[in-house]
Amino acid sequence: MGLIHRALFTWTLFALFILLTTLKLDGKSEWDWLFVFTPMWILDGVVALMLLLKRVQHIRHRRDMIASTHIRNNILCLICLLSKISFQALLCVRLEYLPSMPFAIIMIPIWSFLISAIVYFSYVLFGARSSLNYQL
Image 1: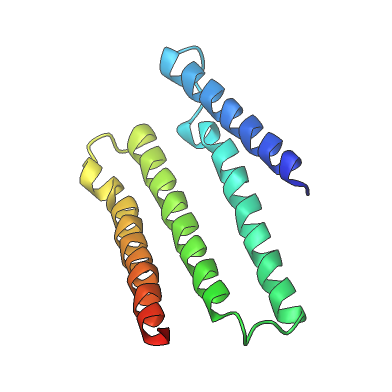
Image 2: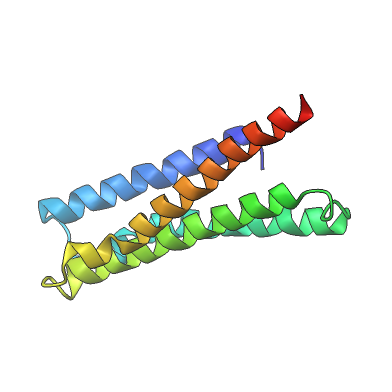
């Protein structure tokens, strides 16, 4: 799938999600929040499939031993995807079934993602800088 097709697919799903959310919030529909978040879950499934296909392609071409950074990036992307899916699921449960659930519990996946992203990017930035100092 080309870049333009991926962008068009992504924006179409975002527009559909915004439309469904607007209809639900205005009271024009009686759909469950699980149905409203379906476009986002379709997008997450496509992203997971693309990550899997990229990983299989690397293994098949025997570039696995060279690209440990690529493995680390795939793991970070998978962590991001899982935390986004779990946040969406908790938000749907909160909005539809358990209105007394505190928002602090819903935000735990986002906080864990942010902490892992800070640790990863700090490692990349400061690890690359220290390796450059050793090469000089």
